Image (cartoon, rainbow, N blue to C red; front, side, top):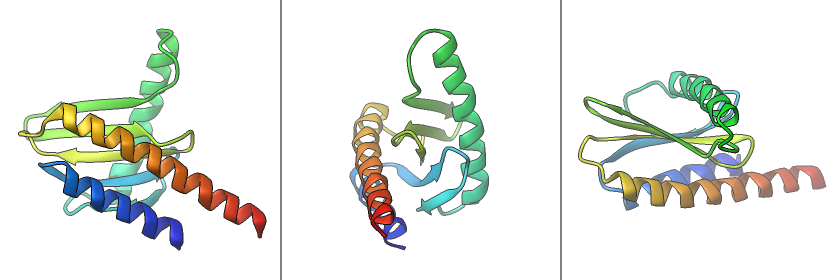
Length: 130
């Protein structure tokens, strides 16, 4: 599938640009994995948990009048998990080490989220033409 290969390429490029980024995935907001670059955690489990967390985050932003969901950052003892909207139907979830520069992570992940959104839109347009 071209979309999966393109998204995987973007994930690998992101990993190369962000020090201490250890992996990532793109999934639908329903928790279905599109592509992943994770070694360790099971992609399907991370995608499902990301979808659940995004659902709560979206409700919090709505309830507090902060607009649509854009991103979520969770810090644990051993690093970070970050999730970003990649259009209305996809999410980008990243796993990073404790020495990560969170500002750099946000900057690069936001750019990748926009590229992934464009890739998904292009794939949908191709599908509609068939």
